[in-house]
Amino acid sequence: MRFAQINLKLSRLKNILNAWSIRDLTPIGKNVIVKSFALSQLVFLFQVLPDPPDYFIHDIQGCIFYFIWSGNPDKVKRNTMYNSFENGGLKVTHVRSFISALKITWVKRYRDDCNGI
Image (cartoon, rainbow, N blue to C red):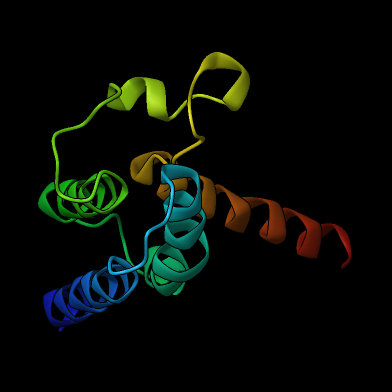
């Protein structure tokens, strides 16, 4: 069941990015689409399931950069793209770090609930 959910979410992410790929957006605009429409589909999955397999994370990252560069080879190194604007990047979401951050928020919520008792 877990793999069925993962594959369903991955195909939904690809469909969203394909629907937006016909627009003539800048890489900054495409990054906004990725953050607001594509990755938001995966938040619940990342929070409730154990860490997804590496192939899933690799596929997501590949889809994101394929969308940003319109299917062309990367024009800027991916490590640079994760940086802030001041450091020459676009603040593209690093999926593995995103998953870790979502999991860490559960620790904070649990701690806050225990302090209220």
